[in-house]
Length: 423
View 1 (cartoon, rainbow, N blue to C red):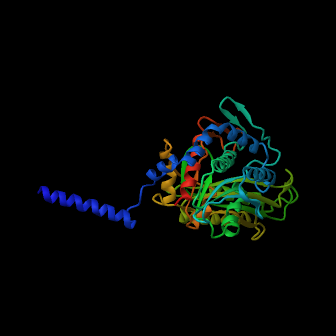
View 2: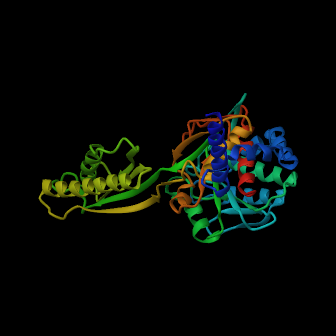
View 3: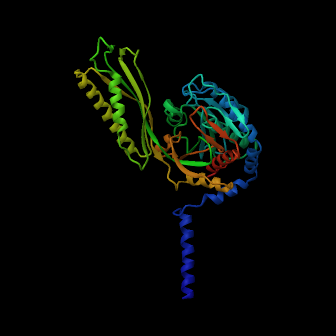
């Protein structure tokens, strides 16, 4: 029996070793990342990230105080272009949609990893973007989303360059346009469709705060819906069908829609407008509608329910006032973020988690709507990570960022992307 047990154990060990060698049992990236973090040049860069956190925070504030509404990111982009050149990145350039790009070339073109953060904010022109500091708290619109990401992007590039970390592959740093709102991911779509088409092996976006790994992409459909009619005097033309009446009916129907709880599926009427005066039947009314889900089928289902609600509302408004085609409607798709995911057992996700562990802290998995939606939908390995620190009130004028131990996010980003180009 004892000899049989020894034989069984020996065969079991042999089977495990065989599985590892042929690749059926995935290797554990944690040990590799621990070793990588101890590499003298990489360790120098990691230590410098922590020591130079005051510089990173200074960059974060400076970037944030340059207004950058979606579609108007040029001024902030010029500053990132200047910094990329100052750091010494290679082939610094701006593509045709405004993405700012710089390279850190290794021994070979591949593996090729992209580290990106978005330039734009949700705040319109004229917003006061001055940043105030209260102890460990920075307050200002966009200070966490995504000025922290931009500062981390620059810090990683700067410290890798200064430490002369020699890479097997190539790393590209991108400050991209168009992540927020109706920007509709236009910057990253441009990267994958033209600027860096067929060149990217792994994509990492830095967005928001904390230490996390987003591997599930919440897709969204966004519509601007415009209702039109002849309009007229509120007294003299009373009896005409009303475009805003049709819109009100549509909103009521949308609010009654039933959606899946798992995976989480949502809808929202976010903006409305129209009309000329209180004593005029309007000739136009409009609304903007957002629908989201990480499941393409659920997203398609809520979209179909929305279409049905709007069409029924127009019919009911026309029937109410006796004009079959008095009110018309146009539903324009103004945002289409694809849903998708990167599997939890994929090398990039496991490396994202292992990089945090190797540095002595932990990262959580989650879902979100970020620049990684595009590569995920194309089955290109992609994740989004946080920039460290703790953020509150994103997308609000009261947005704040707690700088406590924020350097941890930068270390996480640096070790992760180095591991991706050392494969």
